[in-house]
Length: 434
Image (tube, rainbow, N blue to C red):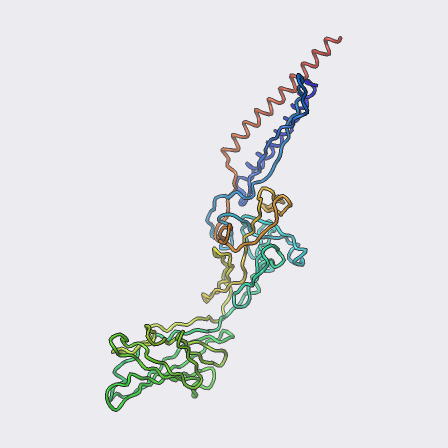
């Protein structure tokens, strides 16, 4: 038993070192492959039942796996849709069959990085055929609360559905200084006009005309103004809203708003300082300030000066690029500068990354050994951040692999020497019998 078991052990030694050589070859060959996870081999002894005074060599067996959870170095690129994970987790992807498959039949794969581009159908995919998946956002850029332990709410990211976009104006800040001298007795009472551009629900540029008329008293100073708002998109001769504003001229007030009295067509919220009006297309909140706090609308001894009139919204624009932020929100950026969230790309996490099954193209599938997948928001819990303009390098260390290569070669030669020795011993035994 001793000689024959030694022969078996030597043969098994050759086999496992051949496996080790295979993993080393793969690692060296993919040292420049983005997202590649190093293959590793571990050896385990096989012990046969022993009796006193007798020994049988059990040999060795090899176990291989890929350390899918290892983090490679990040390299900066010029492509906004080169996406990587900085930290723990992987990106959800699918294959070409997943485009038209139902959510329950769509294949789920995981990748640590990907150089994505927009294909002819508008999907974000890699050259190797991996399609990025995410949770879709609504028209306002909000993502619902999808299930975290299932991929059924994920869908392939498609950006050409958002080729054109516009955002209506919903908020205007009225940062204007009104001349204090105009509310004093004897002033001319001249009205001041302020045109403000806004965008309607179709992305068209419209104009609000805000007319400030001072209240001129018989004596002293009124510190009061009547304001009428006209909408050029409707009947420009009729005011759609009005309000009255009085300013505080005390030492502590310093020309800030003392009171706002809304007129016809306007409602005022004293807590937020917003005056709500209805334009021809949609309501707009105009921030005019509130009593007791610094306000954008002031009355100081100076000229009429619209110092900080700002608004949100954007006209219709053509899609120019797509970017992802650290929280996984994929944003469409339009030529007008407007940004809209179109998807949220989650970060997939499993209990045991070494249990994932490698399926090629630096992608993996979930197995029983890896445990169930859970989808985190990027940066939450154990999940890392999503990084655009970056790719993850291979986890292969060439120096370490070459060292392992030399050791494997020597181990292989040593096992071959065992077989040669056993062969010589058996030959001698045969010669004795003869």
